[in-house]
Image (tube, rainbow, N blue to C red; front, top):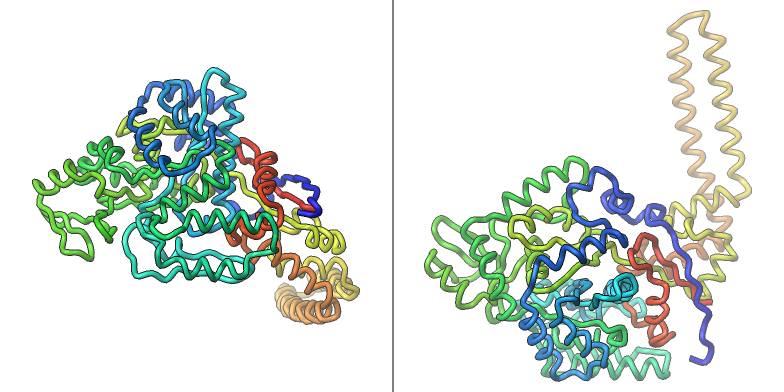
Amino acid sequence: MDNPADCIAQYLPIKETGYFSALVKDYLAAAPSLKPFYTFTPDDQGLAEAVSLRQQFPVDRSVLVSVLQEQYSTIEAADIVRQNIASLQQENTFTICTAHQPNLMTGYLYFIYKIIHAAKLAQHLKTKHPDQNFVPVFYIGSEDNDLDELGVFRYNHNTYRWNTPQTGAVGSMHTDDLQPLIKELFQVLGPVGVPEQQIKHIIGTAYSSGHTIAQATRIMVNELLGFLGVVVLDANDYRFKKAFIPVIENEMFQHSAQAIVTETSDHLNAVYAAQAFVRPINFFYMKDNIRERIEQVGEQWQVLNTDFLFDAAAMRAEINNHPERFSPNVILRGLYQETILPNVAFIGGGSEVAYWMQLRALFHHYQVFFPAIVLRQSALIIERKSIELQQKLQISLSELFQKTEVLINQYVQQYGDDTWQVNDLKAQLEQLEMATKADLSGLDHQLHHSAEAVFTKMKKQVLVLEKKILKAVKRKMDDKVQQIRSLKEHTFPNDSLQERYDTFLPFYLTYGQRFFEDLYAHTHPYGTEFLVLQYQ
C-alpha cells in the first residue's frame, strides 16, 4: 500500500444494533431465564471455572496430536502452529474452539472474525492463567453436504458459484473442476499490488488440482491466520470417530438425544425460540459420494435416498467396523467436538449460541464436558469514502445500523423543510378533538361517539397526507436520499450485516495482512460489543 490508512476502532453494545435475538441479548446480560441452560458465564470468572473443571474430563491427546501432525504433514506451518500442536500432548494445554463449514474462499467475513476471536481469547486466557496453555482451534465442518450454501461466494458485487456434479460431504470433494471458477476470479481481483499477488498465490496453492476442499480450507486458514497460532482440525477421521462409538450406538438404538433435547427445548421455548431441530436419529450415513440421513423403520435402519438397509446386527457391526461413516448433525456435532478436544470455550455466532443452549442436559447425560459458550466478535468495516459520507450526512454510528428505509424516513423528517406542517396539523387536530369532545359531553353521550368516529377518520386522512408529503420531500431531497442508499449499501449490503455478505477479499486486497492484525488488535475476548473498524 502506498498510503496506509489510520485504523480507528469504535464499539457499539450488542443490544443497540438491532441485529441480535432476545436470547443472545439476555445471555450477555446474564438473565435468570437462561441460567439453567449453560454452565459457565462468558467472562474471566466463568472461564477460570471451565479451565479448572475441564481437567476432570480427559481426552485422548495422543490420537489428537497424531491426527493433527498427519494433517499438517504436507503444509508449511508457522513455528507457533507446530508448537501449539505439540503442546496438546500436555495435560495443562486446552483449546479455544470455533467451527464452520469449508465455504469457498472462506465464504463470509465472519468466518475470519470467529477464528481471530478464538486466537484473541486464547492469548487473553494465557495472560490470566500463565501456567496453562491455550490453543486456538478452527474445526472444519467438512462433513456438511450443503453445496448450494458452501459453493458460493461474492466478490465486488458479483456472485461466484461452483457447479460440480460431485455429491456427498463438501470437505471430501476435489478441486479439479473448480479451476475455471478460480481463473474467472483471478481476472478481476485487484487492485494490482503485493496483496493481490499474495492472495492469488494463497488461493492458487490452496485450491490447486488434487486437493480436497477440506485440505484447501486448511491451507487457506494456515496461510492467512497461521501467524496467530491457529490450528485447523478436520474431525472426519476414523481415529476420532472410534472414540464416539458409544454415542453412535446409543443414539441409533436408544435415541437418547431426542427425549433429552426435546425436554430442554420445550423449557427454552417458554421464553425463546429453539434454534435446532432434534430427530429420533441425529446422524447421517456417509460413504463414498453420499451423506444421507438415517431413519429407523421398525426393526431396520434405512439410509434415505439410497438402497442401504441395516438390521440390528448389521448396524452394530457397521458402527464398530466403520464409525467414520456416521456423521453427526447439529445436535451431536458439538458433543463429538468436546469428545476429542480438551476444549474450554466454544466461540459461535448468535444462532450457534442459541442451539448450544439446547444441549447442556445432553452433555450431562453422556458425561461430556460442556464448554463456556462465547458470542463471537461481530464487526463492521467502514472505509474512507463511507466515513466522509457518513460525516457529511451527520449520521451517527447507531443510526447507521438502522434499516435503510427507516434511516431515510428519519433523515427526511429531521432535515426536510415540509415535515413540520404535518406535525403541526397533528397537534392541532388533537387539540380540536379534545375541545370538541369537552363541548359535546354535556349535550348527548351519543355525540361523543360520533365525534370520535369523525376524528378517527380525519387522523387516517392525515396519515395518508403524511405519506404523500414524505414522498414529496424525498423527491426534493433525492441527492441526500441516494447518498444514504449508497452509504448503506457499502456498509450494510442488501440491508444485512456486512459480515454475512462480503468475503475478506476486498479488504485484504486493500490493506493486506494488516487487515487481520487490526482485527486481532481490536477484538475483545468476550465479544459483548459490536466492533466498528474505520479506515481513514
